[in-house]
Image (cartoon, rainbow over all chains, first blue to last red; front, side, top):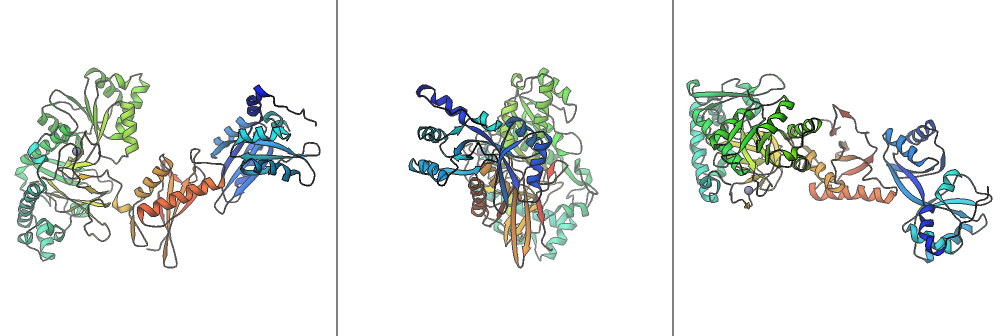
Length: 162
Length: 433
Ligand SMILES: [Zn+2]
């Protein structure tokens, strides 16, 4: 599917930044067998689709990060099943599917002193390009900067339907 | 307000002189009148006359709850039954209860100490006291009752139970003071709320709460919900009942022990050696003036500490810290005494909430290992690994800092620590005994 490019213009820029934030659910998991499967089962039974997923783990515990199509419902069912869940705002960025595509985006960020806390790839591609989820230390500044440089950012609504 | 200005503000030297005189007399009486103590003195090769200074106190034998059971019911009484005017007993969860007795003078002393307790809470003649401690064999109800009358305030002897009627009396009689367990005060609040009764509209001003361990967080909850000052009181039937020590309204920081009647010590529950002020250990109490049922170095099993610093209320009496748990819960890890309550305090400080945790002790080779499992709630959770690792490190660091023992902290999922009857099993000790 082709997505309509978004242009930010002067006075309404702040609103655009709000729209461009993507709500990510994070789930605390102990590092033991079956916990990840339990989360996907709970979400599956509630007819919630996982759009993107990443697991960061240590020897003791892991943090599962999820982008789903129904944020509120996912949060509710996970809490009902006794999971500790958190909410984080992230940004979904289209990275050109060519050599150096990701490097170009990272270069823009590092030149402006914006730190990437973590990033992970989206399950689906958009057309020929990859979609990557970014967590920044300064979300607003990152969005503003990337837009100025012409980097394609998806709105929350686009991402949930992707 | 100080009820007995003379005895509650004595200079340390004068107080110690009184304590020594009373301790010597106690030893003489116990040796002459109670066969159990005579045997204990003989076994230790001690004569009452060997006690020449308060520093000799650690030479004296201890008394334990088991000693009380072994001498059931009246074997440790130091007066003939004709002089005993009151009997109380503690509810023994297993087997026989422990029985205590009082002479007329004991009842008068006890009443005065309750009057001192009430005065420390700002209670005076003209106040109405809603006394919701249980009346009966338990010392709480009657102990307070006599003391309230002794002070000259009005007592409503409502005892425990029938919460809805208690709410009615709180509205209609307008008591200004409530005496009850901390948990009952919160229960009253909940029931009142159900009945549509607003605690803020009641005349209650202060609560004197005890008979069960409670926390500073619970004090804040009671004070906020009931709109009162809530003070901690300590006592146990084996020593007298309520009124052994109490917090003052001025400082609300530690319980003043009435040292002209009780001689407190803190000991290491493992080595039984005395510990210096400020150190956490088992509270041991010697009754200095009790006639019918005196005890020598009674091991309370309660964990506390003593603070001899002067208090802004003007009392010179030592303050004992809020009870931190039972000495039976003490763990010895690599030679260091550790109380679960200390670990709980560290977690509470780091997390800012009542923590759910479990302590797992094991032995690898000759080395004790200590693992603290902490449930991660939403407040503590972060979606960044290093934040959670930082939390682990911070708890580990504080445990090392405050307890002097290194621990491995492991974050676990909520409700993963098994709970029995709603309470989590706090300690698992896998070491071979
Ligand atoms: Zn004081």
